[in-house]
Image (cartoon, rainbow over all chains, first blue to last red; front, side):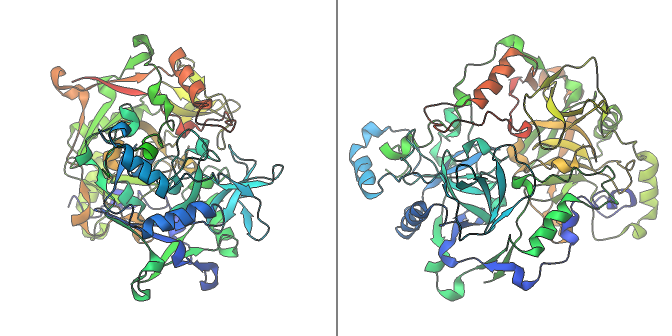
Length: 299
Length: 299
């Protein structure tokens, strides 16, 4: 009996997420994700899928594609994973120091030289920015461009991807122009203090739950780096969908954030089911707590 | 070589979370958690620890203690788990409907009658509220009381626990006064729209990463309820630390959020390491992205 549906418990979860009951957006409200921007990342827990935003950081996207095609990440690991913050992957830190491997370090620096930062970009006239429609704590304005959460400063004429759960970015050394190969993905409450301080250029559109299973480090010890190398979860492989035979490519669609359907989603979220939410809702949306619908179209 | 420390990668993570390097708060900045408010929840992934806030919802805390002491949750499961949102546990929904188990339902309703909602409370004069010090998107004012993130409305004279990652609350039916036994824990971006709509009365202070490993449901199907009962992760047992022999109780300490040490933590977070953060930081904190330090004192 314990696990069957009983009177009291059955409805306790009824209306907490009514969006799920809403009608599906019409076919023309969906955009196909370009397979050249679709990254498939395998860990032992499952496949995580990232969409890249070349319009925001073309050099970083080109670098990532080149790294993926060189099988750079295959067999490397998530070596710094801090619960509620980020999962960082790549070559990582081990027990031996740089001094022990000067040749390898020099070879790497030659092959993958530091990138010029792409923290933000001039406001694009050819991209549709759809304002969220309310204030934000961190940016003068926020909204969406092609499904990505974006901050804007009209006075400065700049825009940038904001750090939300699922944001994909490159780590760097202290210098702005020092990112090379190491990436991180936000797995916790939006660390908006990182906006425009690092180059963000993608977001997880599927399989976020697999990253949540990654072995964690302890932030208080070695700043979250997992010292026991054997405990780090491997990046089994990373692939670009466009490098797969067409038949094997997963097809993803993201809602057009400039569409009427997405506007309705936001309106529904601002005014959640009145039969459950009895206190007048604030009508405020948090850019990072406003899901942008994604669906897997085919395989 | 791949997993050892090389020149380029070694520093890429240097300064992203400098708080870890800060000096430890002095002994008098810590508060011992009352073992009568300390809940230990075992799943196969590890032990998750929740601190309860009886000052905000005394009836719900009493109910939870009674349920735990009756071994109510032992062997039940997390049956509704939505990535980026909540993990809900208790009796759950199964394949059989209420109509099939009228007697069990009636027995349960008799034993654990619906609770009066405790969504918020009059502003307490005997509790120290420490303002966060900047605006919030959802509440007129936010800050901390005894380590808990709190929202306040001075005009209404009310205060409440806000929904952050780790917030522990009771689910309910459509009626305000319908919570009985089912609980949820926030595992994703703060769902602040739930503030004052449900009764929140605790927060996870350790082992959040184990909840992140829980098997997920699909929000688009059955609103996140995992239909295949065999896939639901069990709540192996739930205990109150005060019910354990004194020697076996884990001891936890939470920073005093009214202390100078916590004020310094916040100041450091507002002004992160300038050698890494080159753009002038906003100086803004998000109440739910402001960690309240916890340490395990003894076992």
